[in-house]
Image 1 (tube, rainbow, N blue to C red):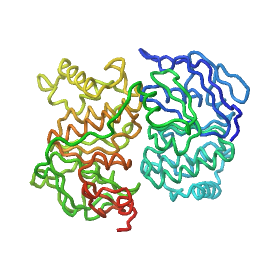
Image 2: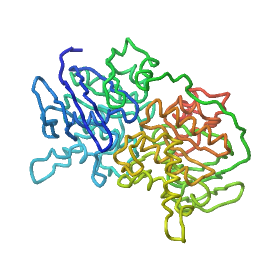
Image 3: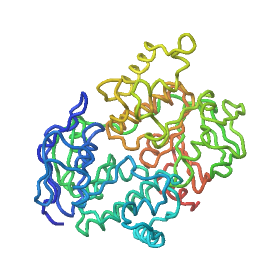
Image 4: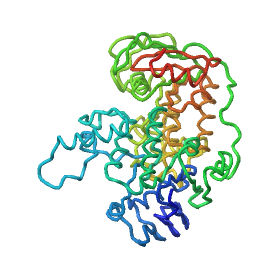
Length: 494
């Protein structure tokens, strides 16, 4: 690896209403290195990488790329200098095909050579060892597949500096391995990777150096091989975190939810029970049908056959409103498109699912009750926002996730489905979410938890169901928990 500096940031400062997102941050990145950037949600990571990619302008400071200084930097300059970014928020056109998204903006004539475009896209996916139909519409892909399309799009543009913001969040274990191979190959070719992830184990496997931000300020840069998770966590949060997963305190009660031979939305003959006070983990690789299961139970997709029982009684769930009225809540995988209203404020988002309890005179929302509800969850979930009237789009990813949690919990559901509850969440906030999930179970709530993080599944679940190709391939009790066994069942090798 070369030690030549390719990108320098000097005194970068950025203000938002009521918030100093970045305060005099100076950093440098070397050619051909994987440089991890870490910090809690709200630390300033996303703001920093948007400045590097030209998406937003700093209020103070300058960038230097290959010896050339820029006070004003925009997407045009970024492209000129070979800077590409894979954001947490996908930048894809849903109505276009996979290949069209990858090659978007490359056509200089009036006619599009679709054959050439499809061939180029297929070649990139072959190199990535990923199987995705290049003619498929992006809107028909899973979140994980869309993430892989974003990565392929950046690779196709011969990036010299590639920013990857939580690239592994929606990926399975096997897909993360493939992505790491892609990153290593890019590094060999002299590409600089700025890698943001809350999964510290990834950083120790893939990065050369790691820089820490906290509350908008630069803290320290370390050689990855000369540090450890405990030191990094302490630098990130300013305190030590000693407990990874809270221990169970309550008891498991009667059956709350039961599925009998359920089919639909790609699922085949699904049967299981979920009990009050239980955290039932759902494991499986991307495409196994985990999110499809959550959507079917919640009424977002159609049940073809089979039956759903709540507290032993058959129910019909045609729409999400039916599920909510039956006491079922869902924290979806994609918080931005399905979980919250980005253009609305925090208070509005928290109260929207529970308007009936906030009404006065049958049609008018009691503003005092709405404010009280929002303040309650603001305190309970430690939502970091300068005001409850702040638009959700201006919050960090982790705080947006907390708003989604608050919105669902405000309905006081008895059965709660968490689909990737800590995706894009920093290590400190993860602890808060873990304790919240365990507390809900100890209160008698029935929890269905879908997660791609093996440690999370094993650490929190009371039982684990494993899915493969739309079916349940096995059930594992707490005493039998094993990463190897879960992966074996998730690969259809049972």
